Image 1 (spheres, rainbow, N blue to C red):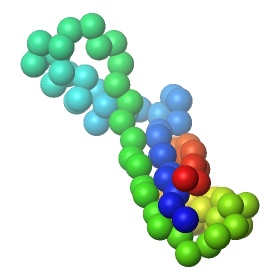
Image 2: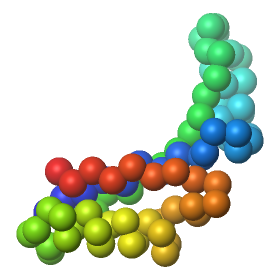
Image 3: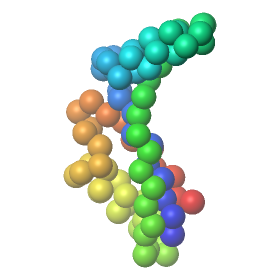
Image 4: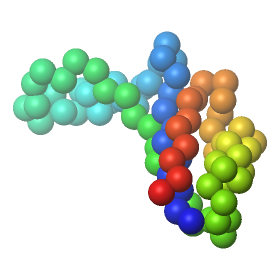
Length: 79
């Protein structure tokens, strides 16, 4: 079973990498970009065949390792 976890900074958390991307886009002539937030995507291949068990396992993975839940949000998608 394939799964995807999207991890982004929570609203209100400063995103210096997003600001750097925004500045670089402006330097390259891409005007009109008012804000950039960057994140990460983690794709996993799971042996689990039960979707609800896979979602529970993924949530546990995010809470324990994949996401820093103090400053990051995550979204789980089982494909």
